[in-house]
Length: 490
Image 1 (cartoon, rainbow, N blue to C red):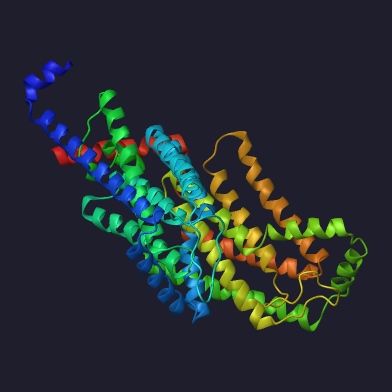
Image 2: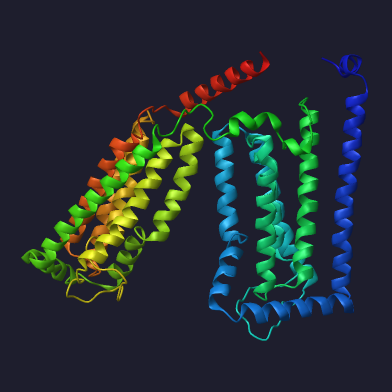
């Protein structure tokens, strides 16, 4: 249909409204850009009132933060959500999710906008060359120059573009809360950079203004791209791509995740108590009547120690520590939800890891088994030896992933996951015993924990009750969306 036919049917009102919105949007972007430019000039020419404000706020917040190690730790944790080490993996993960859900245009928007943020921050810092604050009691350090704040700039751009892209998936009544949550995160990150004494107020304000300007420019360009492609350009409050809502909803075709949730919770609790009792019984037995081969096998492994194997065993041991297990879980769960559009497998994995952690901590505290009587390369640990937390976490994680994927992936390469469920725990177990941290029976305790706990969750959660491949899940979601649309129309 030509533009003339569209005008004949709808009149000039939509065109006029679009032009008005475009002009207002450009005016807002220009105003924000001018605000950043004015702030830059004031900083560049050392305007006295602004310098006094920056200094007084920096000193006051430094006195407040430096009085408590807990406050500093909390501020640093909040600030980490605006660092590149967190935001770059977050954007990469969201781009993968968008590509899985067959939304390449907003995925490209995330990439382009994110790359712009990565270029703007170091370029402007090198150009302005402002030195970071010097406070009485330094509690944190940061490399490079001060203006503008990279955390403020990056968080404004990253969380702002996430809101614009994923807003269509949020129900209209919840959208103000979604936007508000992003605003609170950005504001909290900016505050922490001032309170930690690594940025002035003007640095953070400049980062926010520049971030809003860059988001505005890229969003405007994206909307022009849609218009040139013949797509509807609606209100910005509907998100960048309003029609992507059904594809971005997490599990549109899934029914109740757990029928009778209270009964299921009671079953899981009873199962947890049973597994804990079993672990305590076995742990008490091997602690009071230690098998002869237990310490002998660990001593035998010590004869192979070399500096190179020590380093290799350290790396292998790290594959089973809390950070590695949490990282893999945080990557797998969103991708699983994007692929198969079901909460049940995600719930299965989450409960697997929560149960593993609580069972390990409670059993280790109750059994209180000493570590092997050899040199321990990792030093004193806060927990006892039985069962091995590293090995149990590795077993539970990869076994749960194998259970989920084998029922949903049809291709031959799916056997990679059962192989990992065997190889990864074996590597971690060998490294932990080589480093003198565990007996062989501690490994058996981890295997007992994994087998018993996964059995409990298998019969209560039933993660593979309605498995479907990624293609089948997409088709089911499309059918559910079309059916819901027809019901609303009728």
